[in-house]
Length: 163
Image (cartoon, rainbow, N blue to C red; front, side):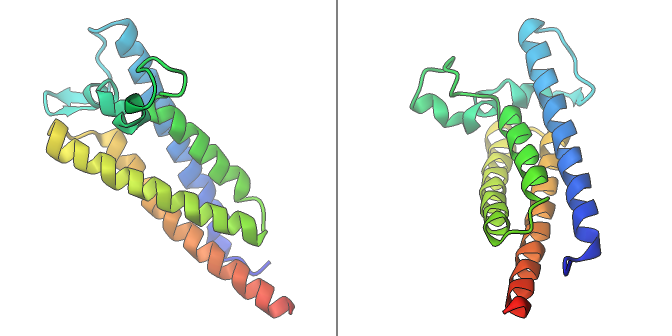
């Protein structure tokens, strides 16, 4: 196929890394809810604490869903659960060579990057915290957007050559 050779490997790496980060974030959040004294590996100090971020109101439904449904509603999921769904979709749809899949990959990547920028600003200006796990997922999301834009261009070129 006319895809860049690096694309599939990079996508796999980014999605697996994103999944590991999201599963770890979920683990930290659940552990902290069960035991308030739980200290995560990513809790390095007062202003470098991932568990503080994950258990803040912005750690669920981007801090926005709670305005529309009850705080404990099944619709108000931890952001890490949304991440697990997102990276799984990115991995699965990445196997497809269709134009629709490529378009959805780019669209969902733009949404994830918008979410990353929003959460990064909450992190910096509201929580005043540095969360390594969070920042790592933002980097993964930007890298996935780049990868998806490259793929969309490759799909378009393949379709044009096939005419």
